[in-house]
Length: 130
Image (tube, rainbow, N blue to C red):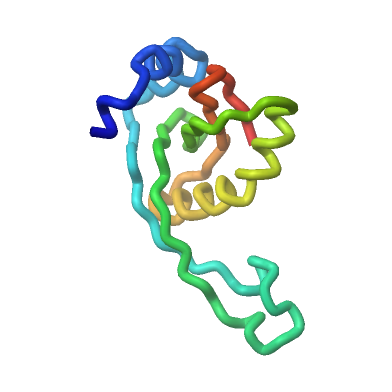
């Protein structure tokens, strides 16, 4: 099963990290949050000059985890990718748009402002804030 394939040291590493400790201190933690949001084709960079620019695309996804702090929500996405060099730049390039959509969806679902978007790299124990 998937649970059996998880390296428990990686999980304990997260809960010993600053981000993990902040999450554990929250009274409102949400995991595996499904969402649907509409994004305009123009925002997605599709068909900027054609009539399709006014159309919308339904984006569906699942937010790994989010938690509430006094001044807003924190979105966390766990990554198991192996990133060999320049991890921060690589993560920003790969995942910044995804995390923007997660924040937009979460704000819509909860009515709370997302104050922070974090990628947690399980292999290295690094938190990268976007």
